[in-house]
Image 1 (cartoon, rainbow, N blue to C red):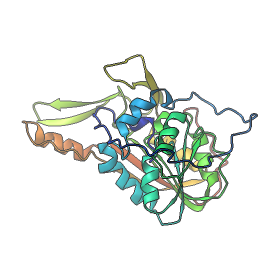
Image 2 (tube, rainbow, N blue to C red):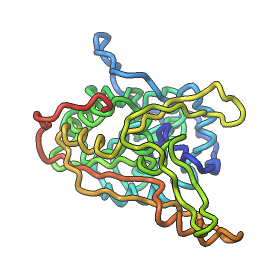
Image 3 (cartoon, rainbow, N blue to C red):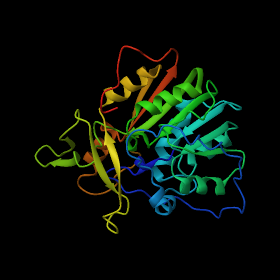
Image 4 (cartoon, one colour):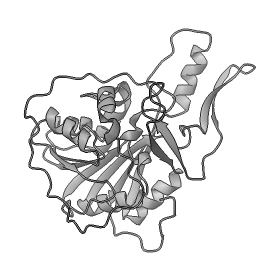
Length: 306
């Protein structure tokens, strides 16, 4: 899947993904042609997880974390509406978890990620007929235009800045009527350092405190919590309106927004009932599906935070 850097849920521990031996020589696919040497470098900082690829690969593994398996992957596959034989593009695909899921459903799959180390892991896992490209999500001009039936960017968009080039590039690669599904940690409730759980002892209610939301910002995310605090990557918070505007400016029309709660359940303790109510009411993830139905908007310029 598009297992991108923002994949580590804020405020929740992930179970390490199961890792199976990699077949020797698997995933040998004639990848993309190297981009021209005079290509314009994409704007903004590079925030892929290539430098911590081994740690991240161990964490996510072959089939994704518990959150992937229980919540994210089923929702993404449903929103994509995968049809056998369709060409599918996975942007910020990481080590290829979603790519393999889509291939199992007989889709023709292409994965793109800026981290060569994660693409290497994806290719080693196979199957060999998935096309993996090492490329920045903000510079997708090497992909054929009007080619893909659907695209995804899952748990990675919040680690990419700016986002307008991503959506513009995806829109160019999608055929008319093609759909894009993006999934992120819910920007209203799961902002790092600016949101947190709280307990109202008088009302016996667990609540989610939100200190900031509308103003865009970036925050460091430690990649080895408790072990290497100096190694981190960035996450970029944007309000929901920024994603909708950037999609519209790329000629993509939002036709579905879904908010997904955690699948976990508290079974013991005096706060179990309140914790379960809070989980059901306060979503962990937000998914957006957008369709390519028109041409890029000319009236709205991307905001500085996009």
